[in-house]
Amino acid sequence: MNSSDGASHSSSRPENGFIDSASVVNSEKAILELLQQTPVRDNDEHLIEFSEALRTVAKALRRAAEGKASAQAEAAEWKRKYELERAQNQDFQQQDKTSGGKDDDDVHCESTQNLDDQDDLCNEANEQPHGFCAEHGICSHEVLFDGENDSASRAIQKRMMRKASFKLSWRCKGKRSDQHKHDIVSFEKGNITTAGRTSKQIALKWESPPQTVLIMTKPNSNSVRVLCGEIVRWLKDHKNLNIYVEPRVRSELLTDSSSFEFVQTWKDESEILDLHKKVDLVVTLGGDGTVLWAASMFKGPVPPVVPFSLGSLGFMTPFYSERYKEHLDSILKGPISITLRHRLQCHVVRDSARDEYETEEPILVLNEVTIDRGISSYLTNLECYCDNSFVTLVQGDGLILSTTSGSTAYSLAAGGSMVHPQVPGILFTPICPHSLSFRPLILPEHVTIRVQVPFNSRSHAWVSFDGKDRKQLGAGDALICSMAPWPVPTACQVDSTSDFLRSIHDGLHWNLRKTQSFDGPREL
Ligand SMILES: NC(=O)c1ccc[n+]([C@@H]2O[C@H](COP(=O)([O-])OP(=O)(O)OC[C@H]3O[C@@H](n4cnc5c(N)ncnc54)[C@H](O)[C@@H]3O)[C@@H](O)[C@H]2O)c1
Ligand SMILES: Nc1ncnc2c1ncn2[C@@H]1O[C@H](COP(=O)(O)OP(=O)(O)OP(=O)(O)O)[C@@H](O)[C@H]1O
Image (cartoon, rainbow, N blue to C red; front, side, top):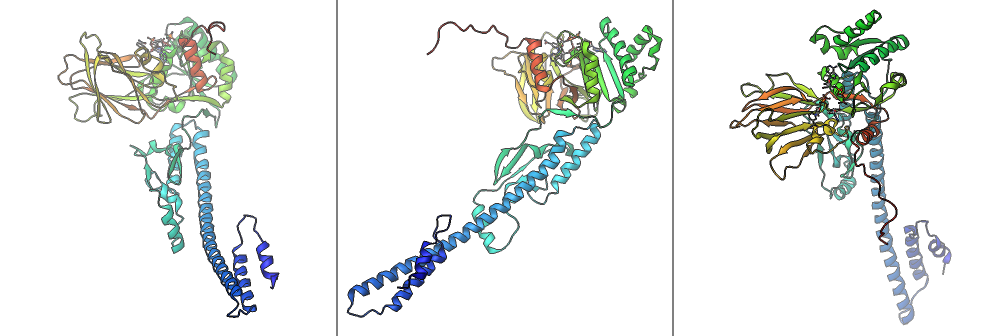
């Protein structure tokens, strides 16, 4: 037997543990050669039987080799597809990082410019050739196919299509609210996974030094008045900043000293509307009420607010007034950790109005809008709708629609949950409902809520905004409420979460209880 071929092939075993298909083919050749070299006589039964057996072995080897080759070709094709898909996914992740990173890490101080930038980013994302659908959606199947049309790749596509393809799309009211949609979910082979969250800690970096500061103060407080004078002088002498104050405060400062002549103020409402264009930073001296007051001055974009605590509770006022130099120094340098506090935009719609938005100016609230029975001693009846779906009929003292910042204020007193201010959502909290099962709700940020006084109501209702500006709602009148596009950025002392936890621990003594002693009965 010529063993040189067969012996060498059978001993060559590739690293992956499979027998090399070329060596199998060669083994068959060696067997056939052996049979030809060994003539078999008709009467030599053993040899006939042996050669038959060898032929069967050769045939079996050939079939195995053919099967193995086709399996290997198929595996190679799958591997090629997998690598192609992986490369594409890495590409998308890279693109996501480039566009998403800018959104998350760099918060520009001019919010109009910021929105424009984000719109551009959004448009760029929509122009991606793979993965994203034109209408702000994500298609699972688009990642799987790379556009090849040959029959082999179509056969493979057929196998991959076993998983139904789908599309996720965001139905947004306006283009500007689309900005974060690509951050939230990612997908691989049609599986949805959470990729990132928008509620990260937000840092504000100054791109040019702040130049103008507005100082707002709680009225009728001597300590606030004295501190205000000190801060104004320090900001002028040490930081050379332009200072704005309310007309009342300017008169107080000038009464104390004529050297405050440089302090600026405004004369009428139209100048207040333009304040956000001039002011880089707002400093508040007072309690939470002063922060609410400052926020209410800005009907549109709000500059970053630095709230100093000079009240008794101070949920939104994390800065210590006695350390104002140190705090202001670091804030003017930046970067600042901020909480973006969402506001609610409220419209009162009178039954007599032809169009919903034609009557009264929208009012923005930082804490809550309350619809209650006011001075009436009757039960309030309020029909509530969420995006045109009927929610419930409130029968009780009233209803609070609160932001998450306001969740620790009136809503808390009425039994609502406390919610981290960076969570976007609207709290739907009844006031003294005359029902055993009316639990408070938290609705998503994108809904529009309509609260209507029924036509057959026995009494009027009253609406108030952050505890102010009471208005009467007659039968047929409604309040329409949705998330406002202009949040209030408040500077954090540490960061959003630490400041929130500190305020519920220090302000409310939340879950304060004497710790159980070590000794006593034990479960072994
Ligand atoms: N029963 C109640 O708890 C109740 C009743 C009416 C109004 N309020 C709240 O008062 C707010 C108006 O505040 P104000 O200072 O102008 O009036 P205010 O002077 O009557 O003070 C109300 C209290 O609520 C606190 N507060 C305000 N906002 C808060 C917040 N976001 N988290 C925790 N506590 C907060 C204030 O520190 C203050 O102690 C309203 O928006 C409403 O939330 C509460
Ligand atoms: N600049 C302002 N002009 C008019 N009113 C203001 C101004 N700042 C605050 N207020 C009002 O003064 C009231 C009290 O203010 P604030 O809550 O800041 O002080 P506080 O009552 O001493 O604080 P706390 O409630 O923490 O004890 C609030 O109703 C608020 O609306």
